[in-house]
Each structure stands twice: as C-alpha cells, then as structure tokens.
Length: 524
Image 1 (tube, helix red, strand yellow):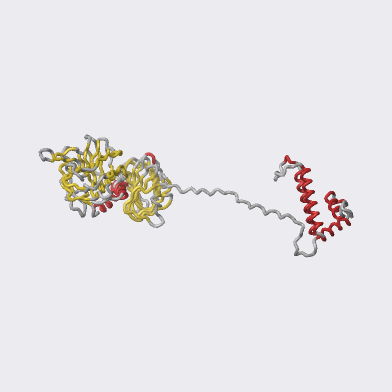
Image 2 (cartoon, rainbow, N blue to C red):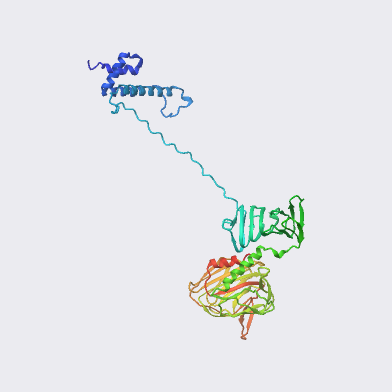
C-alpha cells in the first residue's frame, strides 16, 4: 500500500461517517475487529467523529448560544444535535462492542463524562410573617398586685385571654380611653377593645365617648355602656351586683328584653337569679386615682425613711387648723416647719393634702443647719397664676455664697441660683393649673447642678469651683431678705399649691427622680 492510498480501515471509517449503510456486513465486521485490536484505529475513529460533528455544525449555520431551542430556530439545530449524539453513540456502541474481554480495563474510547447537573437551588421562600397578637389594654397603674402564674400580662400588656389577679388592685387602660379598675381576687377575660368578661371579682369601668358600647359580661349579665361609669361585682357564690355611677347603661339578661339603668341606680342578683334593688355605692369600687394614691403612699414611706432626708413635707395632716408643718423625715435634725399663713388644701388626689399660697404673707418658715457636699430637692407644684417677675418655691433668707434658690419666672421657667456661683434659667416652663414635678441635684464634689421637670432633665450647670452648700433660715412660698433696718422682709410670693416637698443630703440618681415622678403622677 502506497503512502497516497488510504489504508482499508481508514477508508471504512470515512465511508462509515459518509454513509453508515454503505458498509457491508463483512466490512462492518472488519472495522469492528480493527477497533477492538488497534488503539490507533480507535483514535482515528474518534477523530473522524469529531470532524464530522464540526462539519455538520458549520453547515448548519446555527448560533451555538441557543441552549434552549426557540420556535424560530426551526428543526435544524435539534437535528444536528441528534446527529452528533447518534454518531457518538454509535461510536460508543462500537467501542464497547469491540472492547476486549477484560472487563476491568477502562475503554480507550473517551466518552466525555457529562458534567454533573448544576445543583438546583431551592426556590427562595419568603419567611412567614407572624403577626403578633394585638395588645388590647395596658397596665395603667397598680398597687400591691400579683397575678397567678400563667395568668398575668406580659410587661404590662394585656392580650386577648384570661387573667387571674391574686392580690392588690390594678387599672387597665384601653387605647380607646376606657379604664377598668379591678380588685383582687379576680378572674377576668380580655376579649377585645370593647369587651371584657368578669368571672369573679370587682370591676369598675370609666368609659369616655371614644369607648361607647364597651361591655362587661358576667355569667348572668351583659352590661353595655351608653356613656357612663359603672361597677360590676361577682362573688364566689355568683351573687352579682351592678352599680351605675354616671350616665346610663343597657342591661341584657337572659330571656328578658334589654333594660336601661341610669345614674345612681343599682341592682343585685343572688345565686338563684332573684333580683332586687340596692343603693349605688360609689365608694365600694377602686378607681385609677385611688389606686395611684395608695401606690404613692407606699412610695412616700421609702422617701421619708431615707437616712439622707433632711425634711419631707407631705402636708398630710389630721388638723388643718395647725400652724405646724410636720417634717416626716425619720432621721432628720431639721425641725418641723412653721406655717406663717396659708391654706390647707386638696393635693394631687382628693384624699391628699397640700398647701395653697394665695394671700400676702403666705409662707412656711424652717431652719436647716449644717453644710453639705451634695443635695437633692424635689417638689410638686401647681401654679394658679404668675403675678410677679419672680415667685419663690424655696429660698434661703438672703442669698449668700453657697445658698440655693428656687424661683419661677413670670413665663413659668425655672430660675435657679447658687449664691456666689451661678444663676440658671430653664427653657422648659411650668404650666398653670397643672401639677408639675420639679427636682434639682447640686453636687459640690462633681461641681455640677442638674435640674429636672416631670422626671426629665431640663438643664445642667457646671461649677467653676467647689463650694459647700448651706441653708440656715429658709422659707417655702416666699423669699425673705434683711432690709436696712435689720428686719426680714418677704416678697416674691407664690400663687399656687405645693404638695410634697423634700430635701436630701445626697444625690438621688436620675432614675430615682424619674421614679419619684412616676410614683406621684397618677392623679388624674
């Protein structure tokens, strides 16, 4: 065989790729035998298959990027692919069929191992949004209260559900303005913003216009508010009472038509459902204010027992004719105050006392001995009017170095001063006719003073030097100074009320001041 003549096997390969049917059975057997026997023949066969594939691809004119045939590509591209695949399969089939009997030897016909399928990425699933249950009501105020385990609000928030009040009293505040005060022992269910179920206990509802239609339901009754204030009682034997204190309610009883009950009316049912009329008793039910007052009484015990309390005037007195203003501080060297003149009046709660400064000469005089490195002063003040450019809450007689003054400008702003050191005017102001909590920290060690209104800082003053704090003869509600004749003359008189004023020989923290404001603020 000359160099220009193809060998018979190569010719068979070429003919096979030109037309597989052109090979006779004998020629096919010859080709298979050659493939089985000679690796070079197998390489030529693979090469021929590759060339055939390339030629078919070029002849097709198709763009290789079309990984997914589109309708516009017609059928040529899939046919080409199928042709190539068929060619390779035939080659593979031949290769395997002609392979020697050694089953452990790998075939030399390289069959391109298909790439492992790309991992299928799980379809992104949006996390399920769980809507928290709605908060129906919040704990507005409580006194000495405790809930049974498993039947308590979380962080003061009442969701729909059952609650068991084991001790004390609480008031629930609804967003629609409804306030329900509950006394222990009590079991109740909060259903929705307009519906409570009282299983056992005593509850009083104060319903503003925004809460009309509010319902308290018991085992016997459905009491529907029509703009009112009412109380419901359910005892251990299911004896029940309904008291209407203001406005009217619509009463629903089983098998009876609805009935209107008006102000100052009350009904009672025994366990056998026998009904009778009783007297409405307004004082038999707790209110948010009465609960707040009890809470403040407990807190005031802590303040008066503080070893650093120099004076603590709460104006709680059995005798409103006395000129003695009792210093409630348990460990103080400061004597009681002397009421020069003034009016014993009602304080933040109806049960609570206060001092009204309304007339010329109204003031309380006292004497505070000693010098101090740190002091904190707090007071509740309600201004009726601002008659003067300056009115006094608490001042020393005169204004010597180290003496602290508390005044209010006509605008209501705080005007504070430390003799020989500074004067300070707050941006915030005390409104008229509203109880406001004011506090001051004076620290000669830190050389700093901080002032608060309603538990929030409103001003801070840095000292230039250290100076001891002192008071001596002082007055509440007026400022006294010594005139040229050596007489003490008073001016800058306050026109308003003071309820609970105290001085401590230590720095009460900002949290303690905020707590004092919170404990004394539930009076509305």
